[in-house]
Amino acid sequence: MAKELELQEVASVFYGFQFRGKFNPDPNGNYFVVQMKDIEDEKIDYAQLQKVYLKKIQPKYLLKKDDILLINRGKNNRAVLVEKEIENLIPAGNFFLIRQKKDSPVVPSFLYHFFNLSDIKDRISNNRLGNTLSMLRKQELTKVKIPIISEKKQKKLSQLFEVCALEKKLMKKLQIERELFIHTKLQNTINREASF
Image (cartoon, rainbow, N blue to C red; front, side):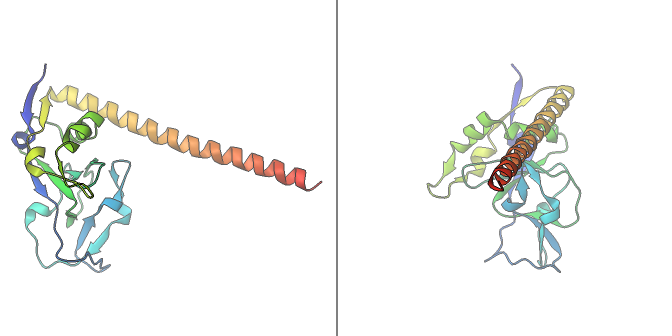
């Protein structure tokens, strides 16, 4: 069995940036904000990020490539990996920001996929607070045990997860195209029959 370390031993965990009052987008703002609506298929849609104007924030909130965001509210606690270095990019308060420690034996992409495993999601969701809009507890999250395997194996598993995710995306696209083809064929047949 693989050695295990608690998340707090391999990474720092912060709450995302808490806005005072309502989030007010500003196209001339100085910070990009990752919100839950910007997440699709466990990826950040960088094209739809909104800006906000903020005077000054603590540097810990500035996202870096390979940081992990974990949705901390609701029932689907998905994780996303920050894949790009974008200046002045911050997470909204409905995320935990997980940042690898310098001497961490865990590869960021492996940790990202680890948190998207259904049994891990189930395990951490058992420690939520609240009924209507449940929220993960930071102190429980930091105690999640991470398996420590060789860096080479972590990278291979991450590649396998990426291949599976791509296959899932392609199958979804194929299903949509197949349905569109069948609907078009059916509609054309009905239109031809109705014209007689």
